[in-house]
Structure formats: structure tokens, C-alpha cells
Amino acid sequence: MSWSLSIGRIAGTAIRVHITFLLFLVWIWFANYQTGGAPAAWSGLLFMVLLFLCVLAHEFGHIFTARAFGVPTPDVTLLPIGGVARLARIPEAPRQEFLIAIAGPAVNIVIAIAIIVFTRAQVEPQHLATVGDAKIGMVERLAEVNLFLAAFNMIPAFPMDGGRVLRAALATQLGYVRATEIAASIGQWVAFALGFIGLFYNPLLIFIAIFVYLAAASEAHMVGLRAVSRGVPVTAAMVTQFASLKPADHIDQAIETMLHTSQSEFPVVDEAGRLVGLLARGDIVRALKERGPNAPVGEAMTTGIPTIGYRQTLDEAFRVLQETGSAAIGVVDAQGRLAGLVTSGTVGEMMMVRDALPGRTYGPWGRRPADA
Image (cartoon, rainbow, N blue to C red; front, side):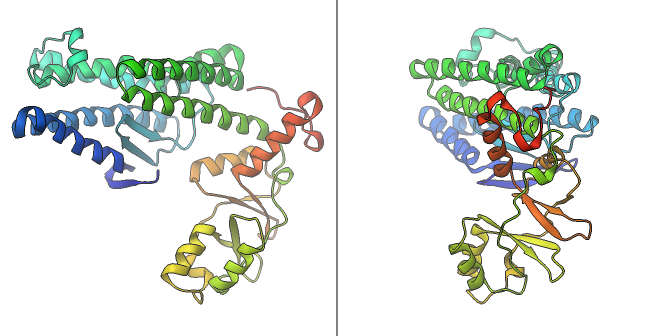
């Protein structure tokens, strides 16, 4: 995630902190300082740090459960509105998604119970409305907020855990794609409700509503892309007409190529035509500023670009795109030479063509695959 800083790793997963989260902590300190001086400021900051450690534990509940099903977990990012664990993929098996989704709230409940049992904290639900009140003990507030986090995350709206639990339940009867459409639609209506409530009570709910709405739309779009790519040959959607560069080419040659094409990524190939890297427009501009127009493309390109055989299917290519986070994936022929490129954009374009065709077929790509 952009605008985030890495602060370490836990069990192989990178821990990242978004810059807005750091600004949020500064704001918490000053807000408490104005009302109660330095003691209140440091106490409020300590409470927020402890709270977000609980949020981090919540996210690792998802992470460790996902790993049990063989799902890679590259990183987790802390935001002012919570944490986001990035999973390489979401299992389409309803049972697996249910267990991954429910694991996070379960961690919060375990934390709350542990606090209550070991500290004899008195939990009062009405304290949630005044969670920032320093008159309430920090331990009590921490237990109450963990219970609140568990309940709030079970709201049936993407990207919250309740939305994934709802989809898992619906998918057992309706299939994965249709279940996602329904769950995403419910999530967007929940976002509208949160935004409306936020207008009168808490402006933070408006930001949460925007995040929920966009996440629900994104989830539906991504699942649609996976559905449209299932069983389709990768050659059906790969880009075959593109400009390529050589590692020894200079940046000024890359600039000239960029100005004469509409490409946003340029494959870099060796003399044998094998893919060795990818040069994006941002890489070109950055190299021009830092190294000058005579710098070789090989010094500015991104290496380690994934490839896939031309006989494989588009859903396999899309899975690799998701797991690696790469801007593109190369399609290679039997000799390992670059034959085409696949990006999320090309899959999206194929999806638009599919939707525009009568009967919602795939035209030259065959019939629409059955819902999963």
C-alpha cells in the first residue's frame, strides 16, 4: 500500500504503518493535551497504541488461519480506521473463507475475555459512547473496545469480516459470484447508512462509509474478473501488439517510445526475446530525474516479472497477478520468448466486451463459464 512505512515483520508478514495512522496518533496526543495536559495526552496515546496492538492481533487471526489453507500473507497495514491484512487470494471454498473471516473477531473476543478474567475488569456497554473518557479505567476501556471491534466487524459489509461471512453463507447455495454480488450490494447500502449517521453524530463514520463502499465495489469487480477469466485460454486476452525495449537501450529511447504509444508498461527483453524486466512510465520519469537520459533501461526496470505459458488459462494468469501484485504478467511461448502481456486492464476489457455481447457469451472465447 502506498504512503506506508515498514516497521518490521512477524512470522514472515511485513508490518506496515500508513502515514495517516502516524498523523492520527499525533492528533490524539494534542487533542488529549488540550483537555487534560501532558498526563492525559500520554495516557490517551498509550491507550490508542494498545488498541491498535489488539487490531494487529485481529489481523493476525486472519493471517494465521489463511496460512493454514495455503494462502500467502505478504503484509498487514495499520490505518486510522483499523488494519488491513493483504492475502494473496481469498479462498472460494465457503468453509475456508468463513473460518478466515471469523478468526479476526474471535481474537478480539478472546482478548476481552482474558482481560476480564485476569484483571477482573467491569465491562459496561454504555462506556462505549465515552471510550475516550479518562475517568474510565484503561483496562476496562480496552476490554469494552475489543468487544465492540468484534461486533462492528461482523456488520455484513465488505471489507469487514461480516461481509465475508455473509458471502460464505450465501455461496453454499447461490455460487461464489452471485453471493459476492449480493454481499457487495448489501455492503454498499450499509455504507450509505453509516455515512448518513456520520453526518449527524461522528464525521469519522463518513470516511469509514466511503472506504466500505469502494471496497465493496472493488470486491465485486475482482470476483467478476476471476469469473470471466475461468477456463479461457490466456491467449484470448493477452496483448500481442506492444513496443518492447532492450536492457542496453537508453532512457531517452524509452521516452521516445512512450511518447509514440499508449502503453503504460514496456516489457524489456534480451536478444533472444525473453522477458527480463518491465519499465513503467513512472520508472522512466524517475530514471530521467535521477540518472539522466543516457542511463540504460536495465538500471531502471523492475525485474522478477512473473511469466506463464501460452497454453495455460487466463484465470491462472489472473491468480498470479493477484498473488505477486505485479503490474503485468508475461506470456511466453515454448522457447521461453515473450509472446504477449496480460494485465488486470486487459481482463477488464474482455469483461466489458463479454457484457456487451448478446446473450452474455464470450464470442470467440466460447460460452460463459458456470458460476462458481
